[in-house]
Length: 281
Image 1 (cartoon, rainbow, N blue to C red):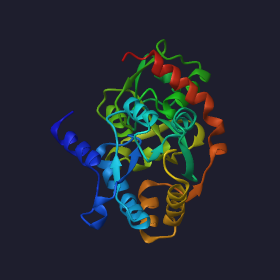
Image 2 (image 1 turned 30 degrees about the vertical axis):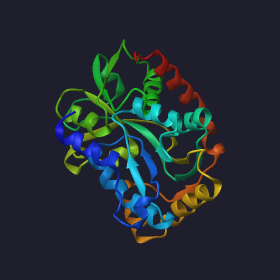
Image 3 (image 1 turned 180 degrees about the vertical axis):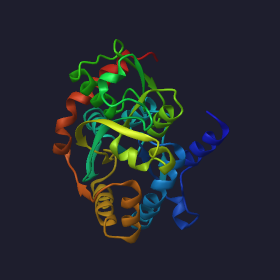
Image 4 (image 1 turned 90 degrees about the vertical axis):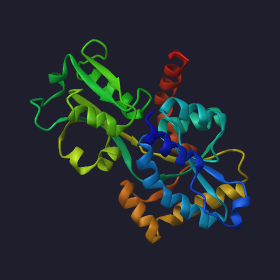
């Protein structure tokens, strides 16, 4: 990790706490799924943390991890009071660590297969023998795309090879730099790419859609605190700061969520659970 990235990760880990009389109160940790770079996580979610502090009358500390695997481990340990996580990881968080889903943006998310705009690649069959960049093997869009390509007659390891690049932005840059012929990017993350990057890309395929991210609360939070977090998130829709947040993140209106909202994610969750068991320590 380069020095600048370490500094930004430290900013996340240190939290974004105001110096006030509330500083003596234990902060609530808001764990952010590391689907974006540390810079982008701070930029997009600091306004949400500040809003929650004002609504809950206690500090809220933003926390993330270096990669998907460590984020899943941290969630399973119960490291976060509140967590914003991917839908299949939300199912695992509920099943294995007792987190409760409380809210979700109305969006769905799909996996996009993108190539360089100038490339002579129009269909998935043109990717036989190609390298495809992915944000992470455990990302739901990676699982969706692998399934999609299998239905197109392409098998991973035989007809194409995945390379992991850590974030959606890095996966996109692998295409623009010529390192990879294509990349898998979440539809929501695609909208957050810098204009200069996105203008160099072309979408050639899109997977089926699933629910986007979920806000969840740790089982250790008392019911009144959990209810206050949910109420604050739902009210955020109707604030000026919330409108800006939704516009910048490309989320739609934040809606209530419960365990039924996660029922369709069990197969993907169990798939990555097995994948993690097979990964070297």
